[in-house]
Amino acid sequence: MENFTYCNPTKIIFGKNTIAQLDELIEPEAKILFLYGFGSIKKNGVYQQAMKALKNRKVIEFANIEPNPTYETCIKAIELGRKEKIDFILAVGGGSVLDASKFIAAGIKYKDDDLWQIVTSRGSVVTSAIPIGTVLTLPATGSEMNRWSVMSKSSTKEKLSFGSEHTYPKFSILDPETTYSLDKKQIRNGIVDTFVHAVEQYATIDLNTPLQDRYAISILQTLVELAPSLMSDKKDYDAYASFMWTATQAQNGLLGCGVRLDWSTHGIGHELTAFFGLAHAETLAIVLPALWKYELDNKCKKLAKIARQVFNVTEGDEKQQANTAIMKTSAFFNSIQMPTTLAHYNIKKADIQQVVDRFAERGSSIGENQDIDAKAVEKILKMCL
Ligand code: NZQ
Ligand code: ZN
Image (cartoon, rainbow, N blue to C red):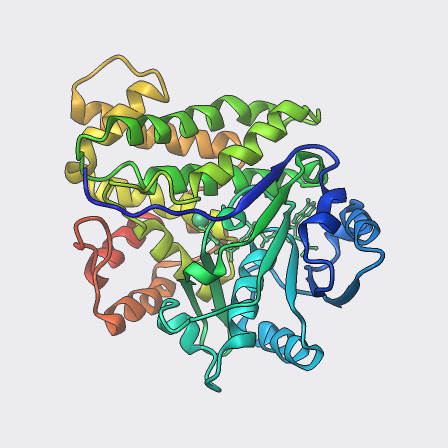
């Protein structure tokens, strides 16, 4: 097991009718910047619940934060927040609104004019941020209980993450009933994102970490078990509640303690979103099986365990089981209507060159063994066609 430091300061308020607690959770005199997306929260009643709880408060709204939130939009929110001298940011929505709130919170306090430095420094230049609270409506990213934010810059087609100890939410409200209005595509995306968060912290080098391994495996088992209910038309509260908590657990830093992390599927996936506009989870479902095939020898032991412990495979030797894990994972994604090829999105061989060029420009390698360079990305993406 490797050394680690773990501290997660986010308070979680979980369960039915918890949005009503907003008033108690935010400092009485705070002037609040209320961030949200394109209006899903008005259709499902979350906006109304939040506004009711905040009826005696000073609230300024900023809407239309897009999926894969952009620097360009967040700059406008930063200007508004500075002008209004806000003291608190409340982010209500999915991972995109929550991620945007972290950039805005750090950006309002940032002294230099070039706010994109917050991202290019991966957050190291952040020394303070406006406090953030969140109401999560989409289980997927774990943004509600982590420091990370993924920002896109439209002008340069970049998508990069940053994080700081100052950008953890102070609290997050997780009411599973807010997720009933998600459509099947959004649910499917959330399942796949959560699955890939768990495996990018699990299917790496074996460092003899039985507790961490079991945490990750239990997340995968829970997702496979819940998927049919979540993808059906019934609104089973317990299934939605377990899904919401599973997604939070997969990406709140706990799984990554003491183990070697991969994140190359995410790294390549972010570029597919930046260049071709695919949803985050759609990119992961394409890249993961190909990347596992490419890294089969390095990941063999852990992949075989996924086959045995998640998909109940008993036949074959370790290598055969590892291959079966890749096949079963793709089949699981397909079973929840998630495509696993670039062809599905009409992305062709010639299109992938720009992604490869970007990795070549950066010159760095990714993956738990730092062995995925531009040439490897090219091979992996060709396997995704
Ligand atoms: O904009 P509105 O109208 O709110 O609609 C959203 C959006 O169109 C809608 N939605 C959210 N909750 C809903 C709902 N519709 C109906 N009912 C509800 N309850 O869903 C759409 C997608 O929302 P979005 O926030 O973009 O999805 P998600 O939560 O998957 O977030 C994706 C972003 O998070 C980043 C991704 O890269 C991407 O930019 N990630 C952040 C991470 C982190 N902070 O740790 C880690 C992840 O790996 C990921 O990279
Ligand atoms: Zn993700």
